[in-house]
Each structure stands twice: as C-alpha cells, then as structure tokens.
Length: 311
Image (cartoon, rainbow, N blue to C red; front, side, top):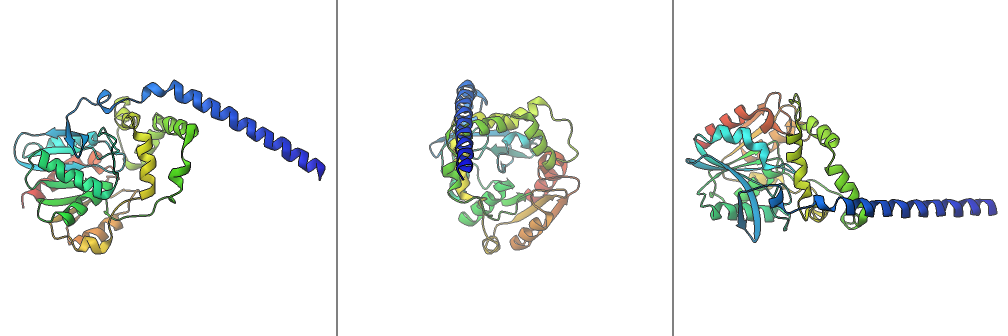
C-alpha cells in the first residue's frame, strides 16, 4: 500500500510538472503569435457599412437590377460567392454579407439567429434594397427562413442552399466556460492556422475540387485572426446549431426554393427534401456538388436563382 502511495505521489508530481511546462509553453506561444491578431480592416479593404453599431463587411457585384443578398454558412467567408455573383451581376445587384463572427464583420454580438435576422434586415434598409431575394447557405438558410417569418412579404423570395434551416443540439452549456486559458488560445491558433486541417475539411465539402491554392486557403484562415474571434466563437457554443422547427417552416408564406449538392456529406439530401416539403418549395439537386455547392456548381445555382427571381 505504501509503495502504491509513493507511485501515486510520483505520478501526481509528473503530471503537475507536465501541466506547468505545457502551460508555460502555451503562454510563450501565445505571446509569440499575438501579432497575428488584427482588426478586420488589416485583412480586408472593404466595403464596410455601419449596421446595428457594428462594421459589417460585404461584397458587391452589378450596378442595376433587382437586389440579391447572399448569406454564407458557419465559418464560410463571403468570397465563396464570387463565381455565382459574377454570373448574377448581369441582371441583379448582388451583395454577399459576412454574418458575425464569420468573415470580416466586426466581432460584436449577439451571435444569435434573431441577431442575424435583425442585422440582415437593417443592412437591406441601410443600403436601400427594396424587396431583395435572400439566398442562405447552410446556417444562412435558417437566417433567410427566419427573416421570412419575421418580415413576411419584405423579400422577393428565399433560396435555401445546402441548409435545412432546422436547429440541432450543441455542446453542454458548461463547455464554453471551461474552454478558457492559454491552452485553448494556443489550440485555437494552431488549428485555425493550419493549411493541412483546412485542406482536409474543405476537401470533404468540395468533392472533385481543383488544387487548393495558398490564396484560397488564406481566404478561409484569415478571418480567424480578426480581433475578438476567439471570444466570439466561445460564446456561440452555448447556442448549438441555431435554426427553426418544421412547424415554423410550414408557416412561411413567402416564395421559396431549395437547392442541394448531391454529394453533400454535411447535411443529407433527405434533409433538404424534408424542408422543401415543409416550405412547399421546389427542390433541385445539384449533381456532383458537395456542401460548398456554390464553388462546384456556380452556373446551375445562378441559373436557378435567375429563374426564381424572374417569377
């Protein structure tokens, strides 16, 4: 028994020493990489517009026509819309908005579905967009559906892209409280600055993709270096995957269209069909596309949006 106690004491000391060494190393790493964290304007030259007391980053294409507002999903930067937006810009004024805490919009909450709907609505008013067509990808799909519920008839219609708009569970509330301290900061910076990790993740969402360039990877990695991102992501954990419920989708009266990548491994095609049925909306599958279907099928998506907007 005494030998067991001695071994337990030695093991405890080793664990304590290891904890102290790793913590000190983590603090040193965080200090050495502190200059990577910068204001959004250091990474993105604009345009920005002041909405709800925060600087909202967006992109625009086209000079005339009906407005189309594009909203990305979780951690999806607005740059992914480039190919689709260029194809739409001949007939529409196109705007891609960074929902906080993603992209380059200032990190000010609330990071909630209600907060995002309010921001999008006020963005439209701030830029004088009358009855825009709202397109939401993944998490953005919940935003456009919630907008249609809160402001019925204010939009020309809603398009859901690879997003069923339904809520799902998240980690327990206490998780956001324990993910603090130098270790979490170090892990966050290492993971969000790793080309290898982003290549792996993006490859799963973008099957048959061309080679990922350094510029393409930077478009995904740089937003994580914007000031306030770490705290913002920690705060979003308590909300889980935000969205609505099927009865709420059935209450939507605005026109809707649902588009879905046939090879989407994040959300199955069956989820899209279910939401389309609840919305009484046409459902179209995009052959060969994954979850990031705007990258794989820009022609098909632009054609579907143009046709839908013209009705």
